[in-house]
Image (cartoon, rainbow over all chains, first blue to last red; front, side, top):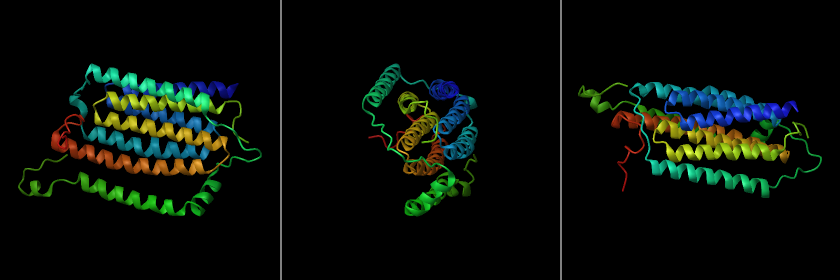
Length: 175
Length: 105
């Protein structure tokens, strides 16, 4: 019973946070409510019996990625706050298509999702079993991801560096 | 099986579907680049929730490994995407995605 209350409360928090991201015109409010939604999803992971994944969710998403988002929002100074409103037909089509998609997926999940737990197996989700699996069966993708992250660092540096030629002529702007 | 058995797995799947469609609506209706990006993050998290739900239901660690990789790739994607928006803002003074039409046919 207690778990049901926890589930519905944090499910509501997650959905409301996500809706605020989509509907609120101010993107700083959106970023903060997205952090709230991610915390609620971490609670969902704990309810699912995977507290290690909940810790990763809080550290990586709420701690690292959203701080990056907030820094970029701050850098791009939205104080001019050009609220760009999309066309009504685009909004109508977007809401209709998104809702229809969600309803269809929910219907087929309830109707046809295969949920049959194999008998006798234990769900191991602690850091030790995940790490053993990661470094035994998935060692090659793990190394590929490390190379991908290195490439992302170099790419981000290249994309955001100032234009050297314009700086030499004195016309470059600093951001 | 450990974990909380009272809550059926389909509820988690429904929650995931709701979050994913909210992300779809955000991508389709907003024009602010950062907001579109945050909607994509919502969709990624909905998929993560689905993975962990099925990992619990099938008592398998593979789903958790997938979530691990998805998180790493989302971090790389966030870094690159935000760098692209900074570069776009530097050239166009806006992050409205409709203004980024240089490669529009």
